[in-house]
Amino acid sequence: MINLKHNNYNVVVKQLRQQAGLTLEQAEEYTGISSRTISRYENGQYEPSLYYVLKISELAHQEVLIASAS
Image 1: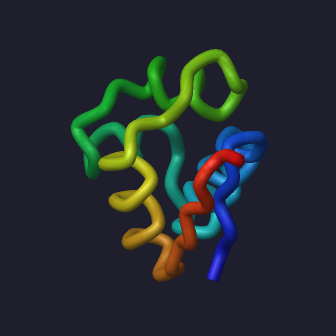
Image 2: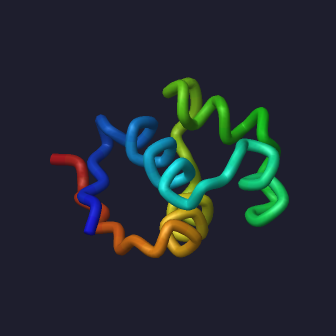
């Protein structure tokens, strides 16, 4: 299980994609989210959508605990 906090989104989504063995282009194909947007998630420029986090965690066979910001 991966603990997803507001300040580590970019690290976690990149780690999940890599665990799934996917390139940015393959992640785009599986999720329908452009590789450019995924790259921006991973570089911390955009906050990833919940859909993307759940989809990529499913592909990586990982459970994700989403912690609320406090």
